[in-house]
Amino acid sequence: MAANKTANATREAGKPLSKSETYNELANVTGLTRKQVSGFFEALGTLMARELGKKGAGQFAIPGLLRVKKIVKPASKGGMRPNPFKPGEMMEVKPKPARNVVKAQPLKGLKDLVK
Image (cartoon, rainbow, N blue to C red; front, side):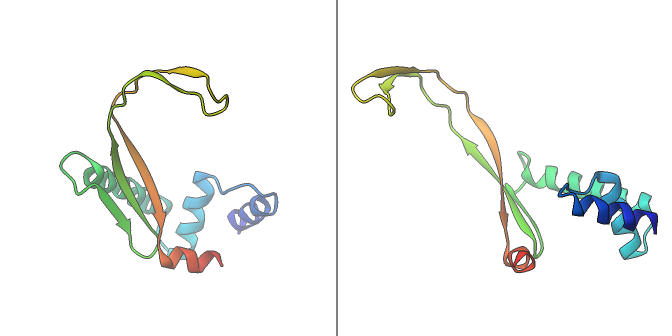
């Protein structure tokens, strides 16, 4: 009961739930222990890391909620480029190394929950 009061007070203040409050709320709703909920999130994180890693598919979906994709951004060369804010002036652009970017895309189920 105390967890519900703190969760409601937090939501009224406009702040998101903390990790502990989230685990407690999910434990109350599902009937699992807090330790089981924590174990589930650890397993989910491990599964996401495996699927988004080098040998994985590069994307992972949480059914009905969201899809997470890994996007490989290639390296970019440096040099002189036109300044978009001051026409006619050139600016120096630093080179950037190749990098991996993670993008999350909401699925229909999550969009319907927010409406």
